[in-house]
Length: 510
Ligand SMILES: [Zn+2]
Image (tube, rainbow, N blue to C red):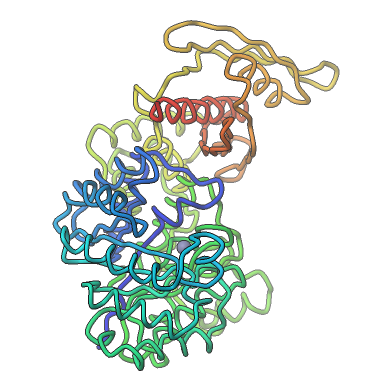
């Protein structure tokens, strides 16, 4: 049996998705969940890119045990030094270094000759190896690189000490047969490749990232780089859940292959990642979309009722599908909440659990019943809570006048580092008015880029979940969310949280 190594890059490539940005605390929570999911490698970040990224990788290396903790570095000495500084706390550290090898990247981006790029790769691997025995090397844009040159670089990197070679389709250009052929050729042309791990990293620009990764397995690749929900640069990466469930569901086709993933953790992980990154999963997404196991057409429903297998090739329970079952009423005890949290895979301390219990009880007092989804939202909201230092702006009071005969008006009281300020705003509706009132009090360069509102469960008494994206002067984007029974309050707290994230980021930069 051949184990396929699942290399998760949700926190590195996934976090580079336009619009996704996670706090250090959020990254740590996701990393702990990834470890529970059973991934083999966590690529925790790109330490040289910012101080925040460095801190996140360091704390994950310190606190998350089980998987290999990996940091990304360009083929530059300082990058590799910085990565090592962050990952050295792990008992299983890995340095991942890369340099672009395709003609277009070499000429337009690096302005270096083939010879120079080959030397950069060799030097980088040697330098990484001086710190760490586990070294991965990627020839960036490999899928568009001349195969013989790519093999020269791969051979050079292996001889310099690389223990994993990753062949990325950086721009999502390859077709499955073509990509599989490239992997086969690596084994044919580079004899050293048989003694190490060959990995692939595919992007989804043409919707083929999963197909290309699966084709690569058949050609001999034994590590797949992927992300939860397939998030990532542009159209995203190969989706972890799709690759894993293909191997599991089509056992006879992928005979002899298996992964170490605990598939029951797939759905909770997907939920957590979408909530914390603010990137919603499309309804019809394979495996984890809301409709993935819904049967609408009468004839299908009839079939499923008589025998599940008529239309279902996977059992929803296999991926930990929670559904929207009613769980907690006004009189349910604390054990019920604890049980749900445990089922969902959250690893929380007693203080956090009791805070969630308090909030659930408050909600149960106001609405008849609390659904599992409500508890997930409350929990994620609490996990994403800003630290005291990060909470520069505090929301104190919100007043709104709205109706069909008046122009909606809002008055907002906030404190900025202890200084109380009151702002007024008008708008097309109450949320718009509150947003204007808040923005009138802060740096005019901070702008609202995106606003999403969702009712977590049905009914007008449902919890409202507002997710927003804020952009600062330099074009950095911060996502934040707010949860409340009142959409105006949910919006206000999401806005204030987003503003705080951008202010804290600016401070961290100084
Ligand atoms: Zn990538």
